[in-house]
Image (cartoon, rainbow, N blue to C red):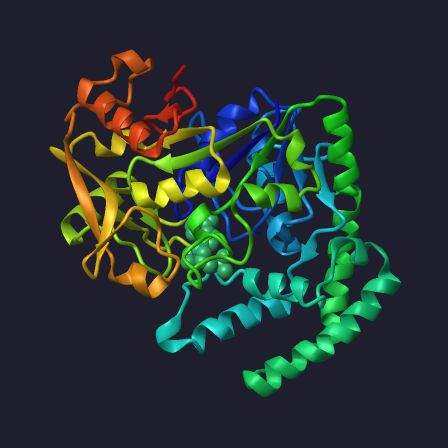
Amino acid sequence: MNTILIGAQWGDEGKGKIIDVLTEKCDYVVRYQGGANAGHTVQFGDQEFVLHLVPSGVLHAGKRCVIGNGVVIDPEALFGEIDALKKRGVRVDGRLFISEQAHLIMPYHKLIDSFQEESRHGRKIGTTKRGIGPCYADKIARLGIRVGDLMDLRIFEDRLRYVLSEKNRVLTRIYGRPALAFGKVYKDFCAWRRRMKPFVVDTIVFLNEAVRQKKKILFEGAQGTLLDVDHGTYPYVTSSNATAGGAITGTGVAPTHIGEIVGVVKAYTTRVGEGPFPTEFGPELMEKIRTKGEEFGATTGRPRRCGWFDAVVVRHAVCVNGLNSIAVTKLDVLDELPVIKIATAYRCGGKIYDHLPSNVRVLEKCRPVYEDHPGWQEDITGVKRYRDLPSNAKKYLARLSRILKTPISIISVGAERTQTIFVR
Ligand code: IMP
């Protein structure tokens, strides 16, 4: 059965670990959207790996890893990551496949991302400055350069000359910065081309052949539902479809081949960057949970904003992704709390919302309606079976499942693979 795994909050739900655990049962692991803005942390014995572009499945020998057409690829970030993996004994040759239809992040994308953020003043999005937004904007504007273009130097040269002349006008006239020299960009990309070539295939054909052979595919979502450009808290979102639909358009595998969609949630909520966050903690709890949960961005190192579990947000994710089940991560981070809150609805201007308001200005004014649950106040990091969890932990999980009308299939109580409880 083919599975899509998505983040059901604002990203950083601990998808890396769940993907790693599920990879054992799969043959292929596929990234379908986003780029090096993602950061999937996987604990492997005493080693910690942070992956940005290479699918997390790469840590399992023999699994095939695919970077699909919906991903935007920065070759510098990609090969930095491949080299770092190689140094630690993880080889990708023969098992990493890169889509010739994927778009390339060019140096001007990264520059424009930074300059745009700087010029937003009070309207910053808090992007990762990896060039993601400008690259997807060019894809939609039909100004993008794809991996396949780079593989044919005549096409690449022609395309780069045309696009760069426009981008240099933007850099010099709008941002008052120096233009990029064609020769330098061309030369750098010729070097990347040589390294990239052995990995490049038509991943649409490749993946559909895997489907035909009844191989098991795991589609690895990056970011989360609330950062989705259509279904998230626009404009405080990333520039791709981080929801389940992105796995279809971002790989060319049809929805009829998908068996299961799993949403990953943290037992509380976090978000990086700007934008509304109704259940955000006050300073004291913020500090406590941020420290205990090590809530610092895997890509930028920025401290994450933390808050109570927001069931309005996750109900939205259940709906737009059609989740079959939920994986709850970092339950152990709540171990010491005497009381744990769940936001079940919002209150705004005398109105109760049980769904996410689409207008970000309304969402900014929403106040959560909480219910309180007694904490379990014991260490659960060694628990292996659902039935051995403290009764208040089971009640908290049962309540989440009931509010979300979705079963919980996996519970994570620590970073290690072994600290995972499968619920029947
Ligand atoms: P961008 O994706 O770099 O354009 O950033 C847009 C927004 O998405 C910012 O608020 C980022 O902090 C957020 N974002 C992007 N990637 C991730 C991620 O992997 N985890 C959490 N937030 C992310």
